[in-house]
Amino acid sequence: MKQLSAVITLLVALSVSGSAQTGERELVNVRELIPDIVIDLKYNTTDNFTHQKLYSTDECLLSAGAVRRLAVVQDSLRRRRLGLKVWDGYRPRTIQFLMFDIYPDSNFVADPKRGSLHNRGAAVDLTLVDLVTGRELRMPTPFDFFGEAASQGSPNLPPDVIANRELLQRLMVDVGGFESYEAEWWHYVYPPGRRFPLCDFQMR
Ligand SMILES: [Zn+2]
Image (cartoon, rainbow, N blue to C red; front, side, top):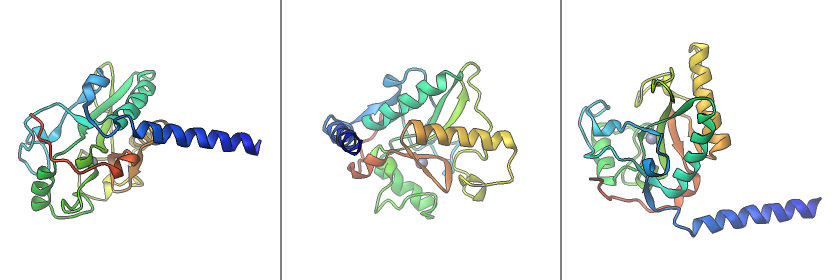
């Protein structure tokens, strides 16, 4: 039995290292791989904490490895007539400098000198929607709410709001293999992406 589990561990390790060699860090268009995902890039509007339109596209890019994991989460949600709505994915590093100038608090905006995992195509900001009506499920706060209520463990919320936050977390972590971020309920990290390069490719 011990030998069998050792073999399984080895196989898992091999498949993880194998996928690392098949372009998992390449930035790809999320919508092309997950056609029914809802994309609503808040930084392509003025409805964000900078009140400036920072992007010039509504196409969302992410590392291929992260998109493959997101597709598994979307498959699982679809069975419940739910889906994902993405507010941000890959973010050029130039934009990170701009954001940090406006809001220099590294709890909420990563210091651009070190870079954000968004700059590596390895972080995604998202929420849940009803797949039929397109309406967002009730969550603790709006996107980019900088305060206690945005934290994963924030109590004193209506039970349905806590259930929605926990459903998103359970699916992203247990099904998708993402890591959640304590300070922001909407922010998830694709762990292998910590090794990916910081990018400044501009989306058009
Ligand atoms: Zn984020």
